[in-house]
Image (cartoon, rainbow, N blue to C red):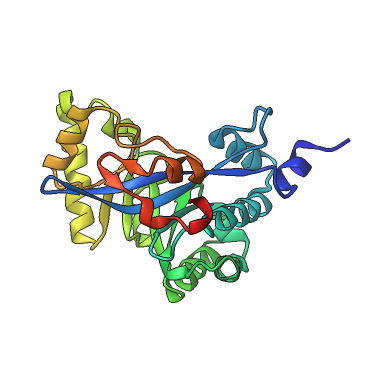
Length: 262
């Protein structure tokens, strides 16, 4: 019988939705990047990304699953025009165990006509690296081919000061737990302000995730966070849906799509 893992690794079983990250500054909005979000096999309990990734972690198959997810994301993103910046998710454990992953990302992206300089690797599931030296070399290799680094879930779990120092991220992605309800919570505001100050000192940018309320949006903007991701501006959708309705929160994305979608 085919196992769930076999099904995950079968080409065509994984799918991708994309969520825009918008730059909101001085009343204007522009697309900064599209995050590639993987969905598991349809009709299984692994369809939600968080369950899929937890399954991969429990089975200790992050490396194989991450490679399958990356291949799926790059294939889907190959339909975009070259100016589209892309964010892709990779487990910290994969970067620490799979020494060949930077080359795989480079080669697979180029095979799909994606310049690696368009990519940001978001480090997720920040469990302590099994092979810290391999993890740090992987980050250096990614930077050498022009890829930027983002640290996901800032403010929770292993997104601690050590990980920030080790990863030297270009982007701090603030977890939705700190963003949702920030407009009415002075303690959340204090933490967000401290993250912004830290990012400025470390020459990084902050992304507010999980923005679903206009008051939360106004709050994070007032703190100098100008990269916004969340359902208030756009839900995650497959590329054909964006192509059919390319205006997102006042930003037209039509220029990103190849004639294939027209």
